[in-house]
Image (tube, rainbow, N blue to C red; front, top):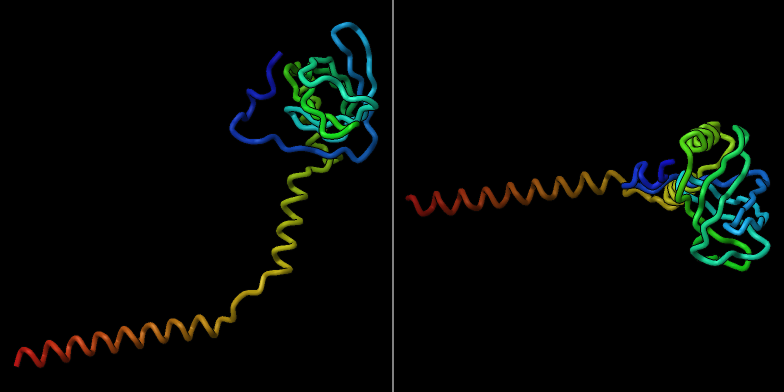
Length: 164
């Protein structure tokens, strides 16, 4: 079993929002079961919607189904975000389950949240972008060249007057 954080540890894993309801099942160390719904998933963790949040730091067996097959991993529950929403991180995931998740991500059925956010930011920037007219740039360059020519002419005149 490999730790998902070992893969590409220097950058954040893409997060995918699930378009359809995806049931999940948490199994505690004392064999209790708790149902939930997977909201967001990445190769390092995700976000669950639960009827009752779980203690932060609890380690559970997490099972959910992708269209590529079931995924079973060991997860640590993180600090709840609300009464129902609680993030988790994978602390153990078999290689076959990692491949199954990656195949599901690459199929295009999941929406990449970060990519969508970047696209929306880009669109907003394009709407508000007001490029300066090229005329002003040309005028500024012409003024700088004219000023440089006048300065150079003055320096030549002063030196020629002193040499006589």
